[in-house]
Image 1 (tube, rainbow, N blue to C red):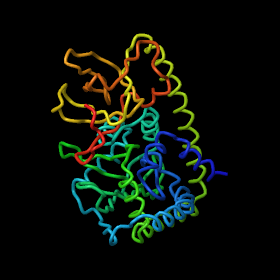
Image 2 (cartoon, rainbow, N blue to C red):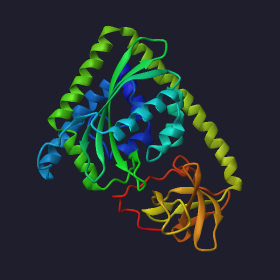
Image 3 (cartoon, rainbow, N blue to C red):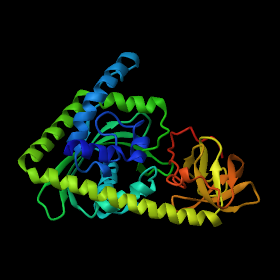
Length: 341
């Protein structure tokens, strides 16, 4: 069936699901570029599955002392973040999205660029927020209307995002897979409060009405899903083949432990721009004499303490790490997990 195929299309994107399943709950788990179409199908499926989890969690964990207020377009910097984000999605600008997100895998970057072939614009971007679990953080529920190229449909959608603040004061979308348990549980709990459930239900009803009003929409979404899936597979295969060849002449560093700091300069006082988890691999640029190594991180030079990494000589890099190489999670001023380096 069309619905099942579309659900599987989105949920088979393992990188998105792996990163976000610990962070956002219930209803919309994926960082929204893969949720621009078929949103209501995801809603109905996850509402059933996650409502039971949320009820169980509420019985065993302490809930927020009171309802956390849901505010609409209340913070200019948060609104600007998502205006920038959705503009980049529509333009296929993966570099901008990467700069305002924790990280993007190669698959995600390719999908962003492929989706842009079908997106005209986001005609509506309304940002609903609840205060987040740590200082200067927000749980955002972003309501959008997506206009497809060469069509008049405006498809409603709702995506759940966790927004944090970097050390330099800028905001970013935090889809790091290593969220503290207190953070993930807080997001789960506020996301099943009545105002968020109502917002989800309203969006679902709008989508269902649109789908029922035009049978061509379902067919067109099915076509988009199939075309993008094929193209992404082909491009990933080509990319992996080129990387396998490059590995013959490239040295990598592999993190031995979690929470290894990645810094902008080769100093313990350097600005922390990210962190590495055990098994993450990065291209080695140079081993420095003072115990630091220069690596490639998110397409730019960065520095790590050499003692926390294994050196992988050319030709023996672990292929399983290729999709995450050089894309470990960003950190925030509240994050205490990055104690190494």
